[in-house]
Amino acid sequence: MKINIIKIPKIEDPRGNLSVIEKEVLPFEIKRVYYLYDVPAGAERGGHSHKEQQEFLIALSGSFDVIINDGKVEKSVTLNKPFEGLLITNGIWRELKNFSSGAVCLVVASDVFSEADYIRDFNEFLAISSK
Image (cartoon, rainbow, N blue to C red; front, top):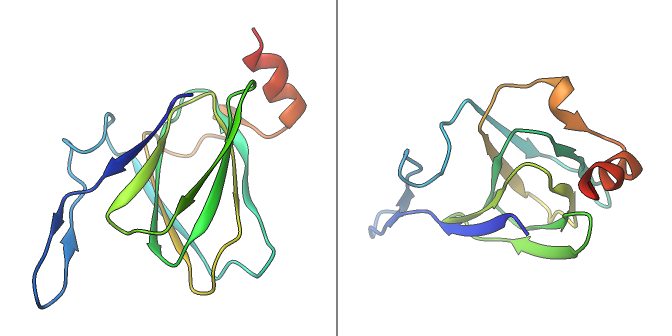
């Protein structure tokens, strides 16, 4: 499956830690950054795949589960550390669930928003991924 947990460099300091995402950390140029927060209890986010775009998800605060599926295998990854993230390449279905209270999910993307890059129907995703 085309996913990978990547450690984000952490500079430890008694005054508070600092983590930095620079071009050496990710295998793509950063084109967009957005974040999810105030997700109500029981709500789910994601529910799509990308044709081209890659994304790097980080739990800046709290925790949440990322359910990923490549059309053959489904796997769950819990993100709960602000110094590591989940790299999801294109062609992977993702669903975000089980957000803890106060969770913040930062998403660093390889491209700007384009609705044409999304596959939002799971059956369509399965048909494309089986080719």
